[in-house]
Image 1 (cartoon, helix red, strand yellow):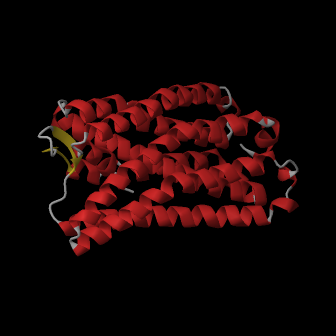
Image 2 (cartoon, helix red, strand yellow):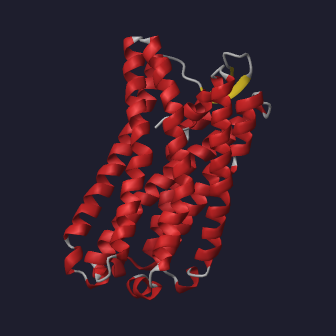
Length: 296
């Protein structure tokens, strides 16, 4: 999960073609994702009056995705012309982008937990109450903020191989880089394990739940899980290869892994474009009355 390090490290690539491709990918993500997430937020606001938890969770996801994408024009400019925005903005945007990535992951985790309990154990979810739901959402954002703090420390300006300043994560030594990547992998593996566990048991009990008399939500849930792994898993493989290359001192493998990491991180950004359709439009297209009956 290289996140900024991978995406911004691509800014160090001297090849103009690679820079151009990176800027095009970023522009596509911005053009598709920003309007899509804004549309989701506007649409979800109409459902918040019911006090339903699911739209609030989707709104948090849309906000985190919007935060991920909104700064892309700055990164694209830096990709093509170098970083000219100062160290403070470098650290701030790095922190916000990393925070939004972590929040997206935690949204998926919380959604799996909420859907499992609400569908198979609705009486337990009702005991949580409005206050408990607010605590869950607030805790999700605060935990994301804490997990992202290292971006404020590691983000710095450094010249790329073309001599232009870039904003990226700077490690003092190999151990610091390896430990940071391992930490990120642990977060992803733990989150993926939780998501898989709850959705596995959700599908096992789905046939016995009247809530799933229609197969529409089952399909939405399946798309959510599948797309989450499709867009995020390759980045973890890239991280593992970078760790191996760093520990073995294989510079050739490291350069290849970093180049591949640029592609896998682009998939993570692209996931923020896909999320509006997976988490909002598809889910809200079905009868909200059923969800409203189960939500608070």
